[in-house]
Length: 254
Image 1: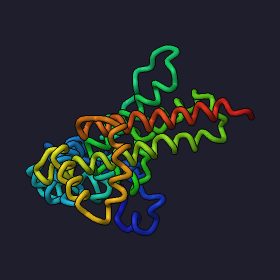
Image 2: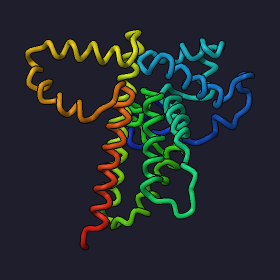
Image 3: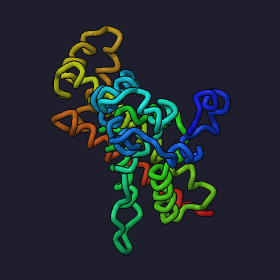
């Protein structure tokens, strides 16, 4: 496992996935507990209460054990958060490969699955920026992304840039969408109610008058009767634009 001191001194090398497995293999663990159950419960708590409220004491209470029992399996809270992060990245999976399937469809499917994880689990995005992301599910996702971009026909020298363009966009979009949904839930209102209230408040502000007036045409042209529809339209269109950019790069003369 990774000691807290090691994380502080050498964060670029600190990961639960790089630590030895001696702790997991020794005997005498508290009965009724294992790393799988602890990680699954951590994910459930993170989803329900958010990253800011998550603690090892709260987790232990949910498991009906002492905090020291949890520390038998993980040395630090960060170790556990890394495990929880990789667990939910496993939800991305890999879209079922269809023989001769177009790389564009595969990319859309991967992007949609990644967005779904970010929206369902708003705590994922800050953790992805904190840890090395080298768990088995994270690596599986990275491999799938590399493969689909490789099939697009881009020169190797620009493939990393294409991956960044598409999946950093998805990261930002999914993070924003997930946090918006989280804010609505915390306020006890629907997404549409929250959006309507926010737009009413902004429209009344003299500081935003020019921006609001300039945005009316864009909002009307975008369409969508609900916030969910607007998110979906924006995501689909932005992804189409990025894919079109990759196509243009492929067609560009060497």
